[in-house]
Image 1 (cartoon, rainbow, N blue to C red):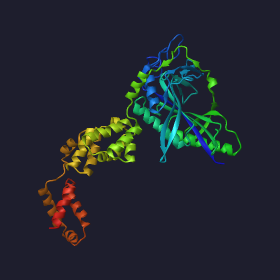
Image 2 (cartoon, rainbow, N blue to C red):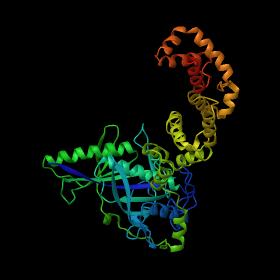
Image 3 (cartoon, one colour):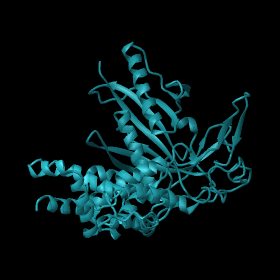
Image 4 (cartoon, helix red, strand yellow):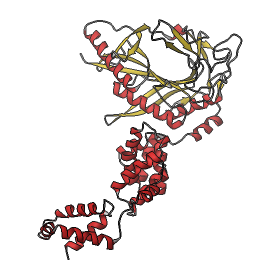
Length: 476
């Protein structure tokens, strides 16, 4: 029997606010353990949480970006469970009255566009972090992360393959970065994924028994974990066994999932409205202001750049990968108005340097004006395209301008016709047989003679000028 995977994702995104969701403690990543805490975030008796307004604004931005309906009235609830990194014994989240519902996000896989429904987006606080001693059976708790603001984005069970799951996650990360609400760094835990997966016979409408895969922290691990789980559940069903509803963990080293605990249902958490927090009311004026502040989002930007500059889909995928990359491209085009040339240099040469240096475009040592200046020097014949590749590399590593490098190293192309004619005459005299062959109709010899001129001038002759003058000399 053929089985179809039914996958839904719960994605937790840490918001890049300066302070935590209910207290003034900083949210900076990497601080010394337990230094960013206060009585509120560690749950001391008698304290009162105060909602961070910026958290609500960031959450609304994300909800609008994925086409959700925003609830004008939403409520925080207490989600009760015990864990060593949850000092209050409950997490402040949202349950019956979330911030936003009924959204969607389009993804593209293998040339097909699929619409993935989004059930809800709600705000909540993060828990702390356990650190396990590798040498002793001891664990430590770091509560710096306790109270860091999160949004949880819950998809509909519309995803049908591990590849679609990864495409959906990448699209979400791209959006949170465009919006400037999170860095989306899965390795540092600022974006984490729980995956719910079940199988059903192909064509069946109902759902099978699902497993939940907890806290997967990279795109590659999401894909591998789902692929393994599909194989595991398929083997059980073909053998006539039942899939157990449970929460499982992913062991990346062994490439397997393994049971963690029985899967909880909502009633296990004993939700009830938090008595210390008033309901959140979002009026139309506030919502309108936030909507007007939204940047141009990736899909809209891709359509506009294609219409405005006539770029290929491949180029657009790279240029709109991040808001900073798109801004870099348009900043360069504003000073060197040849979009296809700019795109080629960014997508090939600049991206290669960024990858080698493990850098993002935000920290690129070559500014848009710097790249535009280099391309202008190619365009006016000061340097060749081949020379420009080496100069760009030097610009990247030294932060000098193209003009500074050319002047310091004497790299400007030789374009003076009288000087080039002298070199051409010398080359023709030194290769009479090749000249004779060209004049006998073997025109491919021209490339050899051009190469000799370039060699004589140490690559500094203007190739276009050399071709023109050499052809004239060979055809008196």
